[in-house]
Length: 196
Image 1: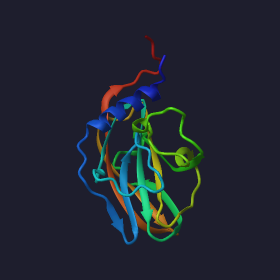
Image 2 (image 1 turned 90 degrees about the horizontal axis):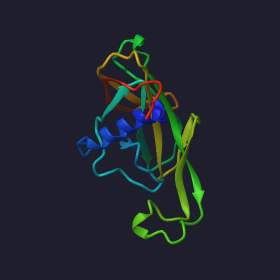
Image 3 (image 1 turned 120 degrees about the vertical axis):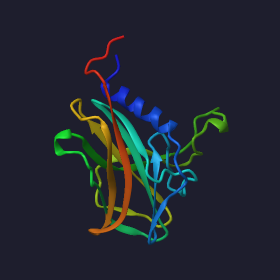
């Protein structure tokens, strides 16, 4: 039996992979930002992706969940960072909820023994993305990439359609980034209970 959230996440991931993203990332002063698919692991030393989505479209069924990352990087340290979703153009009765968390890193001391190098997502020792933290305001360390994880919960009663919103990043209350994205809610609804 599969949960409705897992099925919805699978649908969202499959659709994200099928999208043709343009090669673009933003830079607001010294704060670079770019969207990253939720299936991609972003490490602190990673720079902007070559095919970063400039204005991604997230496809999700009703009664499901989708995710997307926004990577941030600065040559100098930036403190007091907060983030929110603003400008969502659906009515408040749609029930769509957004949640932003910081991607936390854990130390991995060694790679799994006998794993071919071609199968390693990253070499150890090093910091690997793992936990999702409710830790704001946050600090962006100089020369390191830090991701924000956006989770979108779409209820069963949400009206299908294409909607627009922005991830807004502030430093000490001052807007530094406004990164647009699109949310396409399809008419399909993931059932509450799954059976095989």
